[in-house]
Length: 89
Image (tube, rainbow, N blue to C red):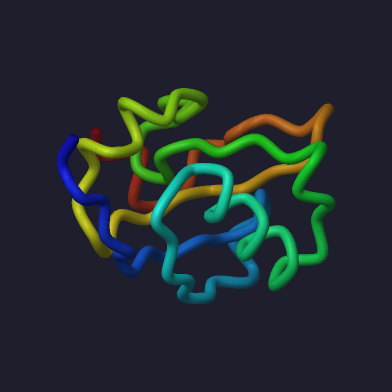
C-alpha cells in the first residue's frame, strides 16, 4: 500500500469571507482541521472543490487531489455557492 503523506490545502467558508490553510492526510482529517478553524462541526460538514462545486465525499478521490487545492467547507444544510472566480468557468 502506498504511503500517504500530509499535504497543505486551502479552505474557505460558504460565504468566502474566511480562508485559512490546513495540512491533512485524509478527508476526515481535513474536515476536523477545517471545521475547527472555520467554526463548523466536523461531524456535520461537507467539502466541495471551491472552483466548481464538486463535492468531495470519498477518501479515494481526495487522495488524487493535489496539495494547495482550495476547498469550501460548509455545514449540513448549506451548499456550495458560485463565487466571483467561479463564474468564468
